[in-house]
Length: 432
Image 1 (tube, rainbow, N blue to C red):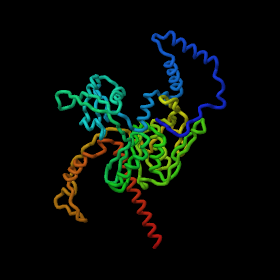
Image 2: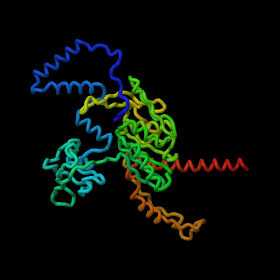
Image 3: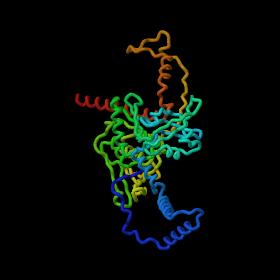
Image 4: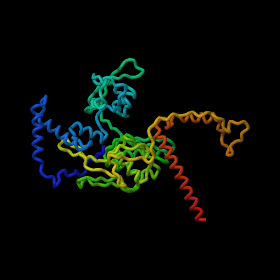
């Protein structure tokens, strides 16, 4: 969701708005009265008017909507990354709600829940056949309230109950790790209010483990989020220049955002991974880094959501989410309904490794000469053993797109060293 929060709200009234068409208002009143009097069940006037507002917004585009109290609360939880709940990532397997992973330092992790646990009942209610959104809604609730889960666990003959007390759960949108010596991985799952600061924090952690030779920024299946956060993330990798600009009907919607001096990676090569699930704010980051030739964008075409939604409060409990502008990359590309095309297309695939026939090497031959530099021999058995020992962390098998991105980074790093070495050699020759 390309979301703009805070700041100046657009002026919804225009000088040339004109009068409302009287005949159409009469038609609306007639339809309203027919529903009010003839619908099979009685519906109060306030509810009917609320439905009318929802329909008016839904008719505009897929992203404008009416936010009642529940929807408004959900939106706030998505943008802040905080909600009161149990701290479980869940999915559906064989029509059952199944724990994917308990989040660190949450009621779920403290109670000892494990990945693969099946939630059979929630406070006595069967969870079989329950949709994922509905299950998540049942697990959330007021901080301090209790809920009992009936769990089925592999290796245990009988289900057992676990009672958890809901607490504030903070979902971090950013995580990082080292893939290989000097090569980092940064995963951004969505753009929350604190995502920019979280990216800076994770980059510091990576650099403490050693100088970065390259970094993969994974934006796959990132649905977007807060516009300002996407600007802060792109800014983390740029020294200067335009990041994104927006254009709308109202002057307040025409904005531009630029990077401040300071690349937090000090120019380390970047690969940005995208796919059809990368939308909105994720596309802003990918497009900006691509236009500035700061990163190689890899993967598949992105979703193509190039519009900005502004949340406009109506009262203390309700608001509307209204599309107010389109955004454009630094080179003036509109992403709307087209998306970002990667520099290198890499489809997600399952790679089948073919075992090489174990052929003899020079080191296997009787009477072979020793290495000229004194290094140890590497026979065919030595090489096979080295391959087997390295397979446990081989990204070719686990995620082929990360594997290809890592190879590109290594190639860029090698080329950069070669290019720098040639420049230094020519500089010395000129001095002589």
